[in-house]
Amino acid sequence: MIKGTEAGWGTCSRTVSLGVKVLALSYLNNSIAVGSDSGKIIILDAITGSQTAVLFEHTDNVNCLTFSSDGKSLVSGSGDKTVKLWDVQTGGVVKTFYGHIHIVMSVSISADYTRIASGSWDCTVRLWDTQTGECLCEIKHQKSVWHVIFSPMDPQHLISTSDGEVWWWDVNGHQILSTCDGSYIAFSPDCTQFALCNGKVVTVQNSDSRAIVADFHVDGHYSAKHCCFSPDGRFVAAAAGNTSYVWDITSPDPHLIGTFVGHVYSITSLIFSSPSSLISGSEDRSLRIWKIDALSADQVATDPGPHTTEITSVSLQARAGIAISSDAFGVVKIWDLSIGLHKETFQISAATDLDQNCGDAKLIDGRLVFAWYKSGEIHIWDAGKGEHAKTMDAPLHVRGLRILGDGSKVIVVHMWGIQAWHMWTWEPAGEVESKRSFPYLDSFYTDSPRVWIGFECSLFKEGWDFGVSGPSPISFDPSIGRPHLDSIGSLWPDCSIKDTATEKEVFQLRGKYAEPNIIQWDGRYLVAGYLSGEVLILDFHHVLPQ
Image (cartoon, rainbow, N blue to C red; front, side, top):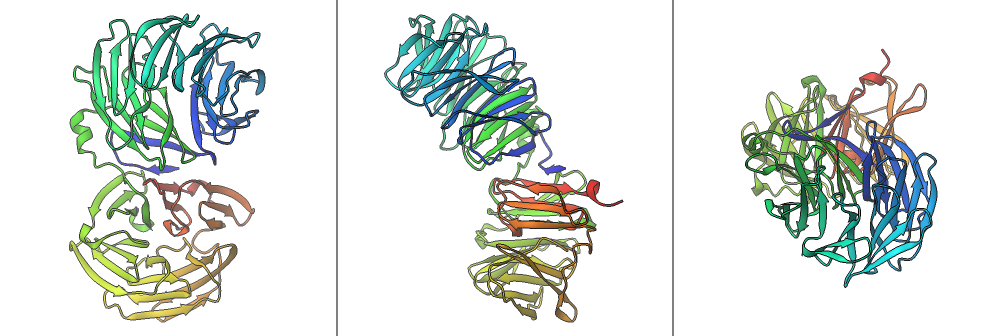
């Protein structure tokens, strides 16, 4: 599998779609614990991304998680107002701790495994005995507690955040240090530094003197949350909205090395799994693992960056070894199929108002031609000449648009059938009426004059050949052009690929894909577009008959 990314300092090496909102993450020994809005705790293998266990006991959101230092236990806090201690090996609950009267937002376990600390919206921090389940201490705040941890510098100390302030306590509930501003705190592995999130500022301070080591700022409308250090102490990461930021704090000039954009909705948890891997979980029901390659500031600045908004069209030209994608801002990118990396970028003029319903692009005689549909019109942009070439009337309620593989015709699928025009003369090239409702363009035969349409809530497909003689019906044969492979259930948000000889599913697309129209494949390569701006390129060579 190739995940299409920009060449550069950082890439998304894996996306795991879970079907639940990710609310909390914890990582240890190549295991990722995921807290969800369903009350389930999902355990994943960090290497393969596969699910290894699901823990069922909570009856509401699992807002917080942490592994014990030996990896044998897991502690969770939930919207059901309980804290639970789990045996990781058996998946069973060792003990449930009752006492909070509101949502539990944070948990921490002491290094010696004897105590658990929990923070809640009931404005308290509670300290629990892991053996007896007894509440040893209750620390009252004026407002909700968002974060609590045992101090890594001294296991007899607790740190909590409430109402934008950070508090230091001993385990008897006595305040031991003056407060400082911040909503989230994280310590470096050697405990010599800590990072604080305070609005749009992330501050790194010396643990002993509290002297400021570095100040960093995040962009946009969202405050920084969920900061963390890399295991080697080199990087600090923080999340703001759907974006993660990573800073190098060990260089003589601490600086931002880049941002990770890919989640559709806000990031809810952020952790490092290695010095070069960052894991983010989000309300968009996905978990992403990011690969970090720290380059110089100059190199990072020249990286054009990935798509920043939803993909609205993809095109596959396997014979030329490329795929083409475009987004809602009119950015068109060409990708190398062999390595999945971006090759070229084109910007369609903003004057064309590219909030299109659907589109397609082809490289024709070395010229990039882009067609898109909006509000009853089809627009043709010739990027080779750098000009908007043509605007023509089209049917309303268009549900798919495609430029044929040789660039000779433009095809649209609308509510009542298919209509085609010659690309440059715009003379009619044929029209087909469909007797079924809610058609969509199927993703097959991207380099041929054949056009297939599927229908929502149906496995039935119609095929038409728009060759020289005009449209003529053809029978659907999944073995033509792609031996034994076919798609089933090509409806947003899932698309399954099966081997028609064995009837076995060989792959399933899941996640924030735009629509069935934003998928194309020719039997070996498949290209698909995410609403988050990612482009997915898959090579099915390993499942094709040899």
